[in-house]
Each structure stands twice: as C-alpha cells, then as structure tokens.
Image (cartoon, rainbow, N blue to C red; front, side, top):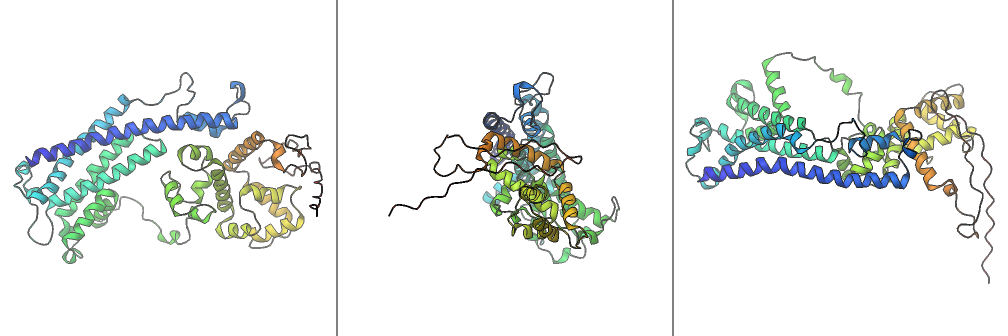
Length: 439
C-alpha cells in the first residue's frame, strides 16, 4: 500500500510542476502585455504613424519579447504543444526518481518492508550498518535537492520570461546528473577521499548529497580533481585578487531586499544594472519607471568612474551619468572651476590641461550604447512631460497662463556620438518677488 501512495505523490509532483509553470507563464504574459500597451500609449514610445522615424529600440525589444504587435513572417510565441516534447521526459524523470525518494521518506515514518524496491537491494536499507547512511538515503536527498533547484530555475525563467523547451531539458539533465554523481560519491567515498573520509559522519554525507543535487557541477569538480585528469586550463587565482564586483546596493534606493529581487532577473552587480533596459525592468519588476531610470543612471556613472570616485562625485550632487554629462559638457550649467574639480576626482595624476582632459574623458563615457539608449528614453519622456515643466510656474501666475518656456535648441551629435557643447538658451523669465503678507 505504501508503494501506491509513493507513486501517487510522485505522480502529482511530476505532473503538477510542469503544468503549473506553463499556466503561470501564460498568466504573467497577459498581465505584462497590458502594461506594455499602456506604457506605449502614455509615453508615446512607439513609432509614429507606423513608420521607423522616432522609433525607440528599447520599447521594440520589449514588444518583440512578449509578442506584442507581431508582424507577418515573424516567429510567434510558443504554444503548449511546443513544450510537450521536452516537458514529458522531464515529468517522467521526476516520477521515476520521485517514487523512490518518496518511498524512502514514507518508509522512514511507518517502517514497513520495502517490497517495491527488491530490484534495488542496496537501496532497500533505510539505515546502513556502520556510520554511513544507505545509498538509498543519498539518492533521496539528492533527488529533493535537484527538485528544489528545478523549481527555482523554472520560476526564474517564468519571471524573466525566457522559459523554453530547452529549460525543461536542462532541468532533466540536472536531476539525472546530480543523482548519478551523488550515488557514485556515496559508493566510492572512501576511495575518492581517503584523507577525509574516516573523520566524516553520516550527516556530512547527507549534506554532500543535497549540495550535489542542487549543484551537480560541484560534485563533478570534486570527482575530476581526484581523478587527476586535466580537462581544462588551470585558472590563475592571482588575477581574482585584483578583480572585484561592485554590488548594486551601493546605489541610492537599493537595499538587500531589492538587490535580491533584481538578482532573480540576472542583475547581480553594477555592470549588469548599467546595461539593463529600464523599460524591460519596469514590465518585469514591481518598481516604478522613474525609479528604475534613476538606478540605471547611477549604475552607469558608478560603472564608468569606479566606486570610490562615484562616492566622491555624489558629494557634489552628481548622482547619475547625465548629471556628469551636464556638469562637464553643457556650457549652460558648468564653469571652468567645476570642470577642474571634477578632473581632480576623475584623474589620480593631474593632467596638464584638466579642463580639456575631463571634457574628452566624459565624452568617451557618455558615448557607450547603453548610455545612448537611456538618453533616448530620457529625452522621449521629457518631451512627453512638456518642456514647460523644466521650471516652476512663476509665482502669481494662474495655471495655464502663457509663459516663456525654456528653449532647448536642437543639437546635432558630435563625431563620437556624445553631446557637444550646447548653445546658451535664452534666459528664463524673472520670477517676481513675493510681497510680504499684510499686517
């Protein structure tokens, strides 16, 4: 009877996991398509009149990913039948291995004779003689470790909307590789690790089984290192001492919880965030669009100048890459003194002509493609908000009264793609003095 319950539980796991993942993916897609359409209307991020002039590539990438406005001849989104050839083997593998694993868990609770495991005599022992557990328990723990990894991997694929038939096949290989590697280590533990095996307990082997199930590559590396096979080049560990990754929680507004949420979208360090598409992040994360644009701008500045110089520039209220661009390249907002101060921060060795050097350096920084993409989104949204909102309405004027807006003359890009020195726009209207309140 216990064999029947084990088969029933493993069948539920094997069938429910792929089906629920596919159902959640379809639900997530419908919700995000609605956000994309609203975003395109509100900020006018689509190409006007269906043409290519004024198109925003960042928005088009998002629409292509979620199959919004599909044109003829383009591959459409995969249907359920496209996932079946990969999902069915994954479900069968979960059922077969899960039946053995669940049977061992139930056997540990009720302690019946395990008649269903006669074809696996070594796995039939719930407890093994000696200090090491039976290989069956190693098999079971490895299976549940691999299952937890597959659930995490599939949910991340749904969150990033990159679930494909290959994902199910990868999870199948993960389960198979983890169990095979763990069983090999369990049966040849003393021969593989003769120097440390005598001092280890059964609990240590159970821990190893879970780790190998969750990360099979760790077990493979251990086996290859003991086999003395050189299948790859050896790494120069001295290089890693001089290479460090900058965590994104160095930026304003990002704490541990936000960093964890963004890590689910493969944003681990500052470089990942600096090159991320803020429109895609707005669709796929719960954070606001302006907040994401600010984070990406901060990350681009930090990635361009290093962490220590980024923190020094923040003391001058230069928080994003566009703040640096305006304070150095825009004659309407900069002075020679400001350029010299910025040059003193950016250059460890003072150049002979600091103003010329800092202008050339910043122009090279803002010429990167991911900076140009963020600038395009910034300019499009600024136009949508209205140039009259670059300053407050003068005191005493009613809302809607005509007023002189700040003129922003068109600027042609320079040879390297960065903004050259902009001509000085007309001065804003003088704000009248506020009269004192009556006595």
